[in-house]
Image (tube, rainbow, N blue to C red; front, top):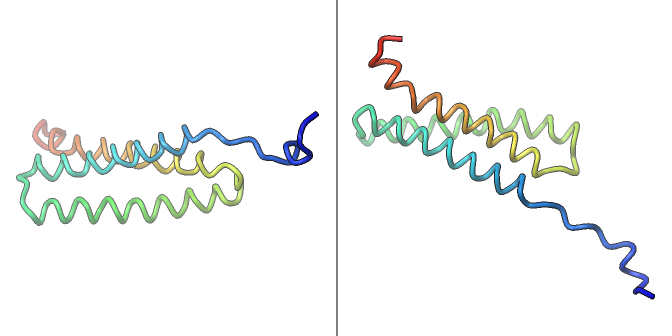
Length: 105
């Protein structure tokens, strides 16, 4: 016989989507930092790339968070994962920009 409160206890959700999303956001930031280093590593390059990362995070994060609030409120981990995926993709794209410019693409 169990406690009467065990039936009402919520199951702990997996933290893996949230942690994965935070890791992907970090990958996106590293992509911007790598691109700043690849174009010379001046203070202004780092400032512009970090500022660009923050603007992209605010704009895309706001859009994805709004969609997450509308469609899957109870799954905030998935929202963070989606934001992280977008940030990682854009970060890798920005990191490859100096190589695309050098190749003449």
